[in-house]
Image (tube, rainbow, N blue to C red; front, side):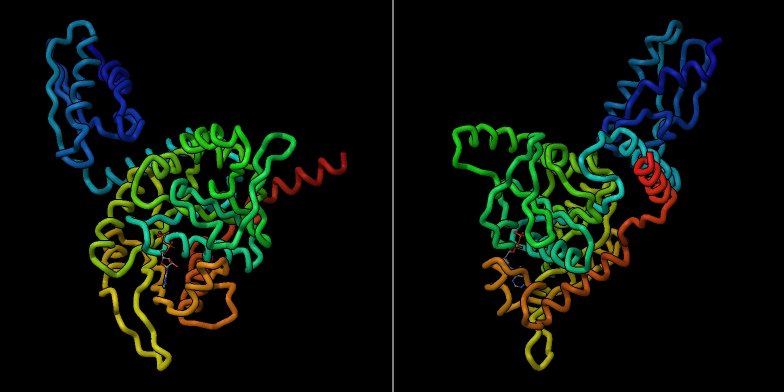
Length: 377
Ligand code: ADP
């Protein structure tokens, strides 16, 4: 008579293709019964119409039929309870962390990715100002322009220089004030090899930016994501598991709909959602009246849908954007405007939700002790 643990062992070779963890560890096998040459499995899926259902069922049957004496495999699909689903996500998230290859980003660095459903909603403007704001408050901050094909960070920061490599062939971030900046827009293109290098960069850009850049010991890394969903977002969840996503949208429902896809995809890539920023929310006149030029509700709806905070609403700025387009981010401009104040509030809110990882954690203290010991030796 076959033991259930033998069956479980075989079932633990069946992976959930989306989560990359086996179905036993994910708690998907609820019950196994075995009579004569027949096995019946109760299989819990996150949703009963899971698109991976066929693949998982076929794989279970194939694996179990490899066992001697098993001729028929029946599968009853049940839908997971809310608790089961949340524990499955915890396991999958832990798995993604355990598998992560160490990058050049310190594991204590807070990583904030800024994404949007489509271009033109102010994603790069928010990323740039967030990075500048964090840096101005004294945090060591990096800004990575992962919008490889549509980079705009160099322009928004008024950088005309180029990235250089150090003697270890690592790329050194461009220093703009105290901010460490990396963007494909800063890659030299006046050498013969540059084109080839650029080709390489484009195909594995994110990996190169995380592995081949000599990032300092950052408190925060802000990443300006390409608009929409795609490989870079998936890779980020895998390579930098500490990433949290800020979704930028405008008040229109069309923008909110595409932003929903980004938030959905982030969840599937195990990237926690930090919150929503509604940009170009309203126009505030000098007498303090607010006008909802682009409609209203997009940010609120998105935050409700995903149960995440609406971090702030940023008003439309009439006068400060021209200066911003020429290389001075709103936060660094002298004029006090409602847009500047809202962006500063946004930075403060983010620091409150995601404070820098303090040195006073157990590992932080331990690292300090070890450093001191090394000095003495
Ligand atoms: P994305 O990165 O989403 O493509 P950008 O940050 O490049 O968007 O912004 C698109 C355009 O909108 C730019 O010209 C930018 O200066 C402008 N913009 C962004 N935010 C605001 C705002 N709050 N008020 C007015 N114009 C804005």
